[in-house]
Length: 112
Length: 114
Image (cartoon, rainbow over the protein chains, first blue to last red):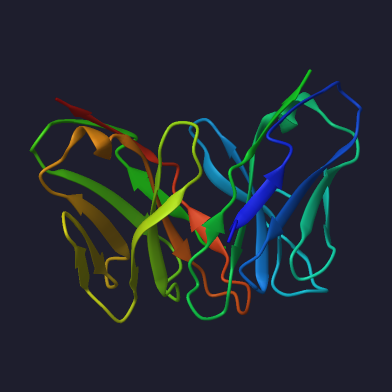
């Protein structure tokens, strides 16, 4: 099992560009999450998907959109990137039994 | 929504000493409290968790205690080793149904000095 995978690992964008961060899990989990991590701020929830076909806003959703493509995949889209979106982005997944969230390796995004 | 405060933000201990990290939460309905360890450049990984119906849980050198009345929980690491050096995050699962959302503290950078 690969667990939770994310692509790309690193990305540099210019202000105003768009991009999609991809996440996939092979653990048959129902719930998936996108977090951003900034120095001294911990992990903040951007969006989550409790189950296939549903998505909800987290603590910091502005400037982002998500798509739960199927049970395995959950993508995060930046339509018009801003320097304030420079961060490390983590995807995570969990199932209804254990609650534990398993994290992907992260995507380090820099917006110039 | 849930709010989690974590202290201290940095902690240095001598190898072999104990380390304690404390967190408080605001939502009295929260019922699940995990601790994650994140090494430099790596993903957060669960090291121990506790549910609201338990007061203490131990796993080798790591223990977590929960005081529901005071709404605080703590991570205790005994006999610290250099490989314990990392950033530790506490979290709480709020009362929202279905999605198991976690609210994280801002982290504690633990340095174990050989």
